[in-house]
Length: 257
Image: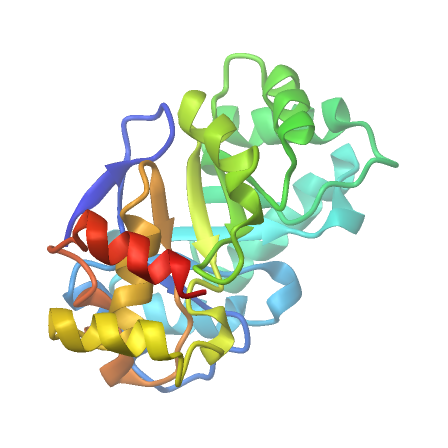
């Protein structure tokens, strides 16, 4: 596995992790990911999978980088604290490695939200603070409100077929050392049968999914969290690390979309 820094923190995270939206229990996916060095596990209170994740990481918690999210409706100061405690209980842990705001909520002052986040960090219940689906203006406001607590990440949709973040969010994150956590990196399976992608996969001797994931994580400061309920898919995802597409292959791949 290859690792990248988590924002401006001293933590390092794998380039490939595990997303748990609609995650099914009993698949051993998380266990396999941990064994392969891909133990970044991302969930959210709104997914309804925190308890499932908590059950699966019991006994291996020290090997998991655990991330979850507080919903946009729960960003008032008191609500953040209450929902953080609820997530900790569901996950069966005393500390969250990364606590993220799932979506911005402009009806609640970001200063109020981040006051609670700072308190969680100071109390040791949260190690790092991140956001999700934030614009550049939202990120700027979040970091200002956090003060000396660094904003370490922004989780956004990013794949070969959805590249809107390249306009401003990705460059902003790269400039300010905010890690981009790419969700939906496999475009919900919509890539299958794409002629240009198939050609590159055959040329590189990789699967189409591995080519897509490699393209995503080849960008500076970006890691990906593909979701699967199939243990063998974890091995495939991890196989996207440790090699690179050459510039001609990248150009060909991007031009074919």
